[in-house]
Amino acid sequence: MWEFWIRYRRKAYVTLGVLGSGYFLYKLYDTHRRKLSDHHTELKQERRSDELIKFQVKAHFENVQRIADSTTLPHVVRCLRSQIEKELDLTHLTERLMKGKDLPNSLTAAQKLELWDRLKIISFTRMVLSLWAATLLSLYIRVQVYILGRHLYIDTARGIGGSGQFGEIDLIDRNDQQQFLASADYLTSFGLPTLISSFEGATSEVLKGKQLKDFFNSTVLHDTIIQILNTFMSTGSPHHWLSFLMPEDSKRNNLGVSSSTGSTDLSNASKFEQLMLETRAVLSSTEFRNIVDILLKAAVDVLMEDISVLCGDANLTSGMPLAKLLPRIAHMDQILLEEPNRNRYIQVIQDIPEIEIFFTVLYASTAAS
Image (cartoon, rainbow, N blue to C red; front, side):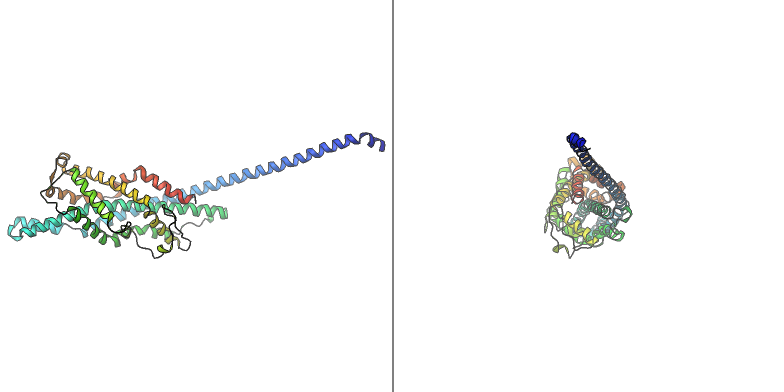
């Protein structure tokens, strides 16, 4: 036996070495295979989580969008139209002017001039204010929807990532969501009187010296509307118009804006306060102001098309006295504040490419954070 071992021990060592090496390599391979299998399992789980997140966010986002389109925006537009008709009523002015026409001695020349001047100011104020309000409210509500979408994405991702259970996700409280969307009523409930006063001031400044006999063609009218908008937007602080759209928040000054896209430190705020503060930060950004300028110019172009139809394109191109143009101007607020599903201005605003880019960046900025 000993002689056998001495004779074949080299071969035995070689054999044992080969077997040991083979076993070692097998264990390495098996470990690597297990790691790959675990990695693939993790990837599948991540893909499943991503699919759950997308499904959950899409369902809630579409629900919020549906509420905003079918309830919030129509309600706000109807309230706005009613309030503007009430606060900027032209009936008493037109009745007095008609009475002065039937009874020449009932009004002095100075009184007639004053009434016509007031009619001119209110007519332009109604039209330009309606255009501005319809544009900004539509944009404001869309910002709300996208901010809700961002929070839905983050809450869903954290819920799935933390618990791993789809049904345990703690999304935005329904009351917070409803209260947030209801804040779009602020303009018609609180901000409109001061907004009217500001627009009247801007309109009076731009129309100062313009007489009823002055001829207005499409170029002059277009430039006049743009001047009124620019005068209003440039009056006061850079973001003074925000006070008409949404309430001041006492905590806002304690939270620092960290980027031009509206990122804020919201760690100490409630969910509703977070939503409102983020909305204010977005609306205060340079990017949003640029979008507002683009949309207002687009809305003015559509407005000019509608006025040309009312006046007759040839008449407005060649020009007509301001006195004859005023009845068409006074009528435009009803067209500007039609129901959203029939409102050409809101539809044009929603189709502008720049606004899609803006909201894509807005949504992604938080979804990625």
